[in-house]
Length: 266
Ligand SMILES: C[S@@+](CC[C@H](N)C(=O)[O-])C[C@H]1O[C@@H](n2cnc3c(N)ncnc32)[C@H](O)[C@@H]1O
Image 1 (spheres, rainbow, N blue to C red):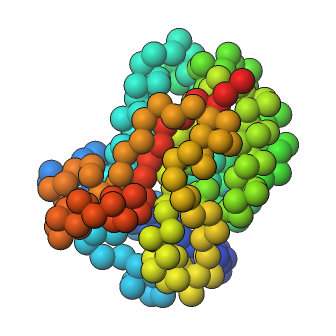
Image 2: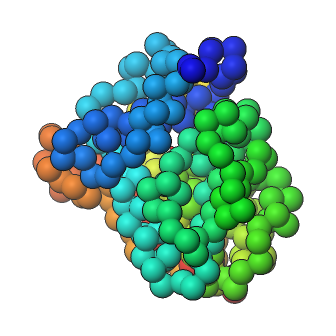
Image 3: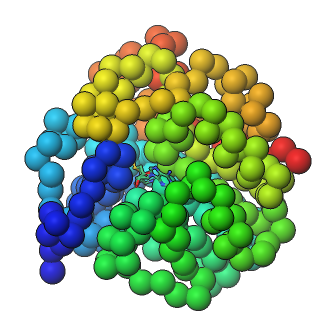
């Protein structure tokens, strides 16, 4: 059964997860898609499409969100393969169906998002002993007390499409708090640079303004993370980017949006 607009009640940043969910569903529909995802397809079918989002959703946006999801999947897969009892925590999970794409017996997983998004997830998805949902802000620190105990090297935090919506001081504080509680664990997130201002203007019109624009990677490492890997989104799967592929020799395009894998420094 479809969820109605009134059941959705999404405004501002939470509304953007309708776009990324649809991108994964459409990736599943591609014969040569980067991944299969029947959950995204099923959930996306049940979310009423929001016409105001149409101008944010074209071929390159779909490709970008699918490529980003796939890149996080691969890193999470590596983390899971290296750990005995891996724990993955997705902050600002939206309707991420990554757990279902990567599921295996020894894996524990937490999806955290704001209460209104979590309420939607609970109508579509089901918790188990190893797979739990938290309806809370990542910027209210109580969630840190709710994680099952694990040595830091077994924990991977994912913030896909999240931190750019936070004020820079809040990103600094989030990282400081995470370092204090989970030093040595992996934290993977994506960033946008100042050259992404045009996209940011459109998002602001939707009520989802971006606040954290990264000048350079030193700005990130100064917050107390060790950089393990950094990839420009436009340089992943170049065959999917059309004209953007040609533009990535321009540094301001290449650095517009990147995905970073880091370790939280003790
Ligand atoms: C662009 S969506 C990305 C969703 C998901 N990570 C994905 O890639 O499909 C941003 C998500 O961040 C969530 N969000 C915004 N502010 C948050 C906060 N303070 N704490 C937790 N989640 C938040 C929104 O509700 C939304 O689901």
